[in-house]
Image 1 (cartoon, rainbow, N blue to C red):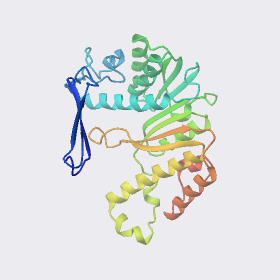
Image 2 (image 1 turned 135 degrees about the horizontal axis):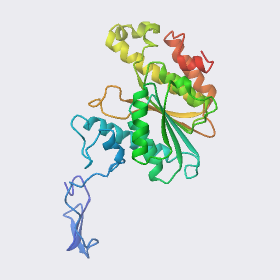
Image 3 (image 1 turned 180 degrees about the horizontal axis):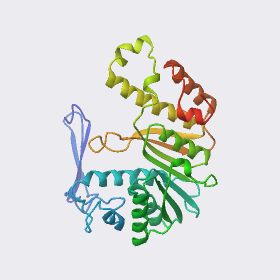
Image 4 (image 1 turned 60 degrees about the vertical axis):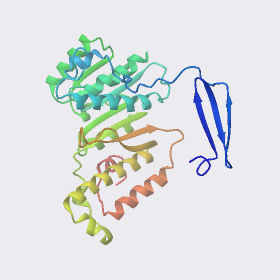
Length: 309
C-alpha cells in the first residue's frame, strides 16, 4: 500500500528506526532507535476492578474469600463492578467532593450490594460519608447492618421503611434508586430534586404508567399497534420525559446502558448531575410538554409531583 495508499511509512524497532517516503520509488532512511525496550506482547494482564478485594462482597455471598465469584453470582458481580465504575466517575465530580459531610441514600436497596459499593468508594478516597440504605424488608436490613459492622464499614447503616418514610429534614448529596418499580422511580427522583441532591442514579423498572395513556398519532399507528413495540416505546417515552423534567429542575441528565442485557433486561440507567448555572428551564419544559401533547399523555408521576402536569 506504500506509494499508492500511503506516502510515508515508519518502522520502529529496538535496533533502529526506518522511514519510507514516496511516492516515486520511495526513499528509505534509517536513524537511531527511539525505543530501547520492546513493548510487552502479553494481552493477558489482570484487570483491576473497582471493588476488588472488598470483604463485604464475600460476606454478602457474591464472592468466595479469594475474590472469585461464587457459582451463579458472576452476573451480579459484574453489575456491582459496572455500577461502581459509573458511580465513581460521577461521584468524583461532586462539588466539594474532597471535603467532609457527604450524605448518600440508596432507596429500595435490597441486600445492599450497591449501598456497600457507594460506601466503599468514599472510604477508599478518604472521604467521610454517611451512607443510608432504605429497604422495606426488615430481615434484609438486619443482615446488612450486621455485615456492615463486621466488615468495619463505618458511616454505613440500613433502615427499614419506604421511600416516603425518609426524614423530611434529611438532606442528601447523592441519591440512588435502582430497579424501583413503576412510579417509585419518579418518587425517588422527586425526592432527590426536593432534597437538593447533587447526583442521582436511577435504573427504572416495570414501566406501567404511560402505556395505557398513549394515543399514537396516525403516522405511528403501524408501529404501535404491536403490543411488544408499544411496551418498549412506552418505556423509552417515560424515561425521555423523566430526563426532560430533570433538566428543567437544574440537572444534566443522561440515559445510558449500564450493563449488558445478558445480565439483566432492566439495564438502562438515568444519571442526573446538578449543574450551575442551571440548564434552560423553559426550553426543557417546552420539550416535555411537546412530548406529552404529541402522545396525548395526561398524567406523569414526576411531573405531577413537581406541579407541572
